[in-house]
Length: 397
Image 1 (cartoon, rainbow, N blue to C red):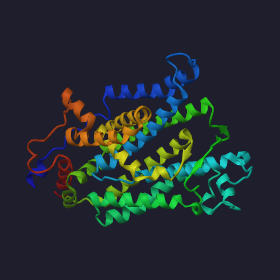
Image 2: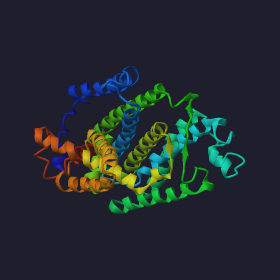
Image 3: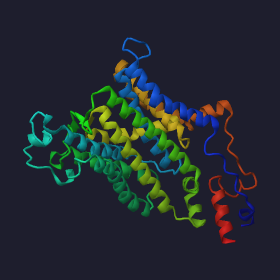
Image 4: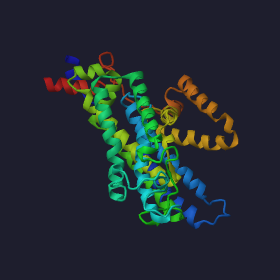
């Protein structure tokens, strides 16, 4: 106990270095200014022109990057591996898709106020869960509320039962698969196997215009950057230190006087909401949402992006999402039959040779790993536990 009471907390560093802020503002300028100019102003024949395909591809990958960032919060910093985050991504997408289907109005094939698939199935009125789908504000609330509430209920019972490790991963995968089967059914009112598509407008403005596409692209990029700043602030706070302590030694956290349940549940819900927001931004850019987004393979891919980029780095998962999906976009066109082998080879190679991901490898090569290790305390507590143990010891004193 003497060691704990005499231990001094390390001085808290800056929120982000000057170089980090420079990169952040460069990314902001590229997203909000440079990309729109290259797409709208620069003529098609110019080598500097950013095509509509490139806008859609980068926008889609930025949505994936938000999911990877959310996964890093719970897996990289809290030690909870979820194989069901595709569910929260799809739920956010379905909430936005319901609104977009209502925006079609009478422009559908059947010239009805009901979506075409409901007319085809001889539905006479909207089901109860479509009640607020005509309001954009209500849709934004539901994009946050629905994934958050499902994550809250599931997480409460799972974490209270102290389900951990591979068992938790399997349960999240089972939950996602059960939801996939539910959404496949026509009577649930979610479009069955085909899902939602053929979107016309958002807020009364046609989606197909370059201006609207670039607006959604910019909103996606800004959302990614805001979530990055939020995640960095969260991890640097006392809450974030508790999460890392739970990852390293949950039993010692409990002995130090902390209840892991509210911390794990909070970060779990935050992560689910981030995926829901990503799904809502994804749908108008891609133009379709169906139960396939809930497939277990999609959830596993999110974990692969984090592993490739580097767990517990924040920037690593974002890079991993861009690298893996960029390679996927190219390989599925050039060598479609080999894409799955490539994905498996990446995961195996990273597991065996790059346990810290690409960011970890770069840090080692550049000798930039300056994380302080308190030598006097090293034999007593893991690094993530030391500050918490010191605070708990001081409080008891």
